[in-house]
Length: 317
Ligand code: NDP
Image 1 (cartoon, protein in one colour):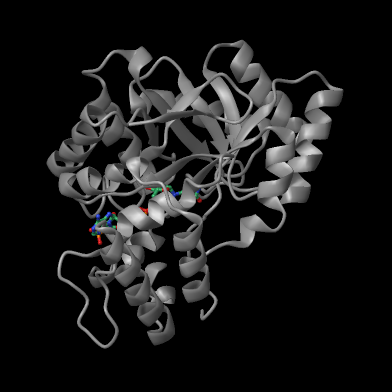
Image 2 (image 1 turned 45 degrees about the horizontal axis):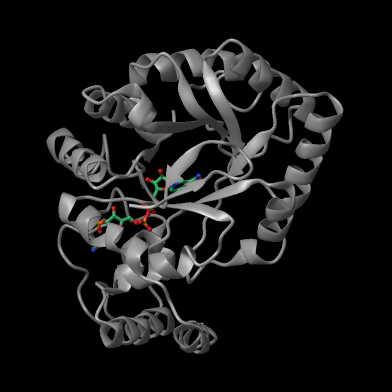
């Protein structure tokens, strides 16, 4: 495994991280989830991502239970808040009240004394950014969280938060967690340049487009059993990728991977890690073998010729 600094902070995260959305506490049994987490840890993954809202907190519980056998200093736990945790008006969003209450609730579910990285899962237009930033700064001062980050904030929202933080001498936002993969590249235009300039690290999610960029979904073919797309409770987002032009393009990318003697998942992850300001690609895994296959991407360096070939293929979708 290789490690990168998370933006300008001193925190080092593995180039491949492991997340728990739609898997742990949901589609995957707790035993299999633990096998994946242990496999990841053994292979050098030190960065584990989750959120309070993943399965109403169950994903945090599964992750915390698996990690408790390891020294606390050897892993980095990132969790998030924003999405509703109840029906009442203050049980959602980025108000000081919800931040303080959910931080305590996440610590309890994870079984931890502190959270390494606490992330605002989305921007909250109903709360002044100052209120959110002061609440996060207080949690850092109290030792309940070590660092703060955001997820899927726009370049303008990030710039505003950085400005307010600096003006008020608050602990800075150190990371952003956006979607990024060969099929979803919106961050390249504004978010990535702004964050690079401000020293904010990217920890990108769905790097394999939820499994589409493994090449296992072929055009005009049944979805493989035991896959996210074949499961009616987990396929609500992945379905948007199921267009013939996309799946055909993915098969061409699969050909490029084959020529290099690697798998498409390894090629897709190495392609992401070509950006120095991307600190980690957060994969999901429904079985330990996927973790084993995917972490090998850290040893793959892509030449300019290969990057150009990939670009030519991606131009078609
Ligand atoms: P990926 O794009 O890595 O997709 C993961 C899924 O792809 C796996 O669960 C598995 O599904 C399949 N897969 C992975 N590797 C292989 C392989 N080698 N061969 C075959 N299939 C494979 O990431 P996710 O979409 O799961 O997102 C990763 C993490 O990012 C989440 O767990 C979460 O922590 C974070 N996230 C954050 C969001 C945010 O808003 N901040 C939103 C979404 C995710 P299967 O075997 O079931 O087909």
